[in-house]
Length: 203
Image 1 (cartoon, one colour):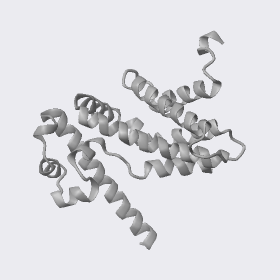
Image 2 (cartoon, helix red, strand yellow):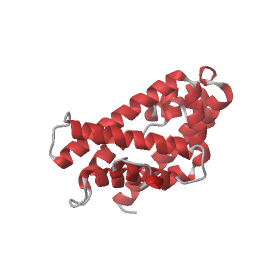
Image 3 (cartoon, helix red, strand yellow):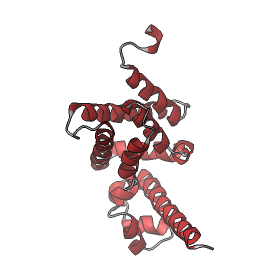
Image 4 (cartoon, helix red, strand yellow):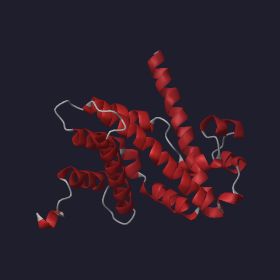
């Protein structure tokens, strides 16, 4: 096996361990409540040591939320890398749709359980909002770089905030419908790009 292949295998095992810890954390907190679950409980359920747990997450709250530390930089880079003939709004659309992986869309029950757990614990909800704000800042910086404006200019700030709102709307609808998250996000972003002048039925 080549060094590249070995590196791919290590990365895959790390991802699987991270996912196992996140799943265990969500399931245990759903069953017992956040205050009654420890890092040791989560580690045992995922069949790893507490020391290994802390290689992936700084706390049990982070394990429940399962934040991807690379998501923000990845979205920023994807916005910048879109074809130059695309508008900024279209570049954001393509970047966010790419971020909605098949893994997330196909794992509906786990994600819905996580959403229910977060909604039941204010401390988790606050952390989730903070993580969303951090990702949105990266999105804004990608937009600003793409259009050649400062990151504190109205345009990148407004487009980033609107795209974040579109994502939240899509996730909320996804929790109550059988449609795919990808399709719901595409719909929300298309309406956003069209200017929201009227709903589709009124056009």
